[in-house]
Length: 397
Image (cartoon, rainbow, N blue to C red; front, side, top):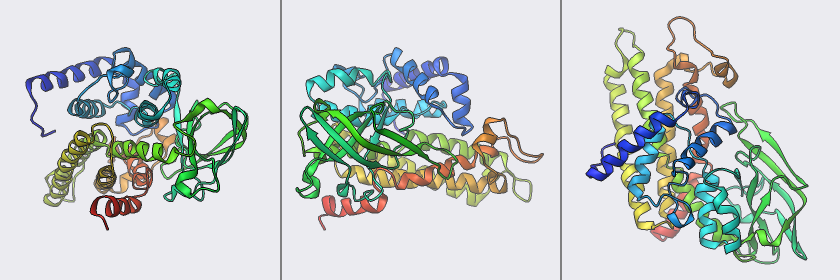
């Protein structure tokens, strides 16, 4: 990290490092650094360790139980936790519905849900995309009809990340089918244990089933679970997506994977028996990634500082650059791993897989980020859609 820190910031960084060394469970750290699958208990356990230390909500204001940290402190925290092998904090509560409730939620909703997010009493998921409404989200068809003090919800969501773990889902639904697309949408909070809610896993390239299909069949939702005003959910959605896209930048992840890339390149040799890290072309590729990461870091700091907690269309630039950089780092990891990187199986890794003599110990997990990070340019609104947003909202064409 090339930023120049004040004495207070250096002290804060050392405080974070000291805490993580003492508090991060070794089994979780080893899973992360070896690119093994994490399970619900891993995420919840680490989140509650942070919460007990007062760091459960790094980006939240103190009045809602957050740290009240500056943008730079949050960046230092993210980089240091990822570098140490900590799992990411689940963004659906902390980075998505939490900020939306602070901005649009009623006092009753805030009092009911916000205190349960930093300690992960509730595991949240996001119900936005549908089979026929992905990047064109405003064409969604999941319907909510008000009947007295309840909404009755019918429809289907897809790519619902971690729905199989979730207690609650924040869900975009159509409440006025006669209105123009964006004007007839509302945001509801739905208990995943409600009668009529079901999920089915979708297996992805990395062998995981973190994304799901989710169905709603005559699901009854109390009217008080409406966020904001009826038919004004699109305003909430745009605000939420700004936070999501900024988070997709993955600065901490990029630093960790870049560090692992250098380690990989130092342990693999070329045909002449020299480490790849000494190869000029490999070093040039790594240097380019480092420069791009420094640029992304500066961009993220500028956008986050100027936005003052309310990310605008500039978040689309951060999302594009961050997702592309993550993918490029993972691609170079695979290039360095060569043929040792191809035999990949999550079950094999968990069983303590090893390669034949001659293969580096890290190679069985090298493919995992390559496969997993292919989706970063799709979720949160595909990069093609982000370019349209930039064109219209920033450039004005």
